[in-house]
Length: 353
Image 1: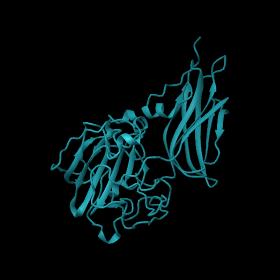
Image 2: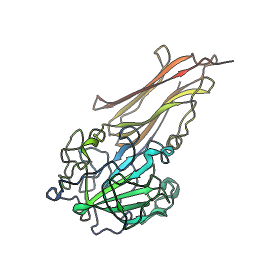
Image 3: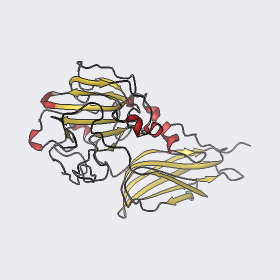
Image 4: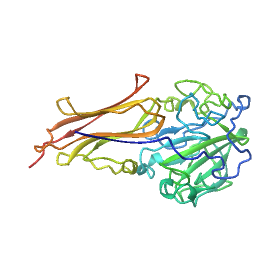
């Protein structure tokens, strides 16, 4: 029996203080509660289903100092992060419907960029995107003094120009890997008078957070979105089976090879996001008789994980794997209590000799 694990630390990317265009206010300052417009609401900025085909990776950093905390006082952000990151599970989805970037509200296009290289910063290094951390994107001005900024779009995908009027839900482009981006996602920043507004909790100013289970009553998201955008204790981004060890970049590309009865091994893998310090992950692969054939329990995480990849597997026996349904179960314990659970199965046919 073999077991291998790979995990990534929280994102090492910097915040986005001047990501696309020169802004009137430097630093991360949150707009005070008294200035909110009751009529302003945001639609989802991607043509995806939240929690199914896209996921919130990072929220606005509510900590005014060198620490980091999201609007629930949780760890799903990093120091200075001034927006919401909507992540796609794989690069293969960029060109699909879920990768379509949409206007979150009606307004007028103020500024655009559409010629930045569409390459992961893991390949280029941060120095290559200095001054253009947002990559390809745009800024839209809205009623009530609001602005939305969209970052990391694919080069050449923008469908609007400065001066264009757009309707809420109108197509703007598609998700890419431009600027300081390690994975396919849209970074959406909301501002008012140059100051960051957290759409999940606009009524609380700098440093404010509350351990709520979802967007607060004053959320700027349209009411129909609030259930789908509810805060989660962690999320399984990818899960499946392979015939050998898997790597993060292969899962990211969406090209993991399928498992089969003739493969050298049967491997179950899970990539999860939004894990906290102290979380304990376990993954168990069981055979058709329900008995475990491979399993692991990881050591408690020393710090929050932006994403973590765990996989377990077993080499193919000489006589082949018994045909039937194989099931993998992934669990996360937080402070000794279940925080996340996910099971998935596949059926292996008999090995033809």
